[in-house]
Structures are given as C-alpha cells and as structure tokens.
Length: 80
Image 1 (cartoon, rainbow, N blue to C red):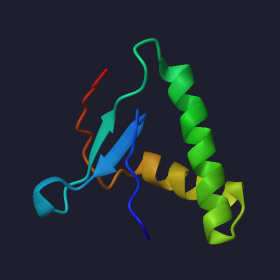
Image 2 (cartoon, rainbow, N blue to C red):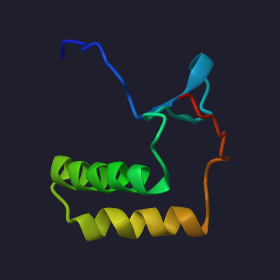
Image 3 (cartoon, rainbow, N blue to C red):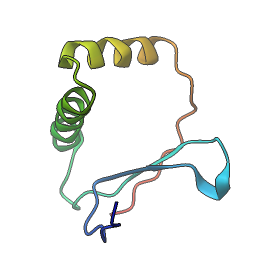
C-alpha cells in the first residue's frame, strides 16, 4: 500500500511511542461539534461494516459492548 499524505484529518487514533495505549485526537474544523463528529462516526461504522463484510448493526453491537465496559481510558485532546 502506498502511503498517502493525510490532509485536514478529523479523527486520529494511534498508539504513541510504540505502546499499547490508544490515543484519540479530535482535530476537525473549528466549528465542529458533537453532531459533526456524530456524522463522522456514522461514516466510520459504515466503512468498517463494508470492509469486513458485516452489517452496520453488527458493528454497533460491538460498539455498545465497549461503551458498557470500556477497555481503554479516554485521553481527550482537541486540536483545532
């Protein structure tokens, strides 16, 4: 896969410093709010479902399980 230069990202999820700790950076436009990011999340759910050949409901089921019993700590960063 040829790496692409990423311009104007909205959400970056990565493991900094080679650790297993996941970090999420929200970096949408300055006027973005929770509704704007909700649209991004919906798109991600649809893309994941299509990529893995499952239904959107199957992805949402796992999201609900994670929300009820989180496996990662939230590290909040807003870069806008």
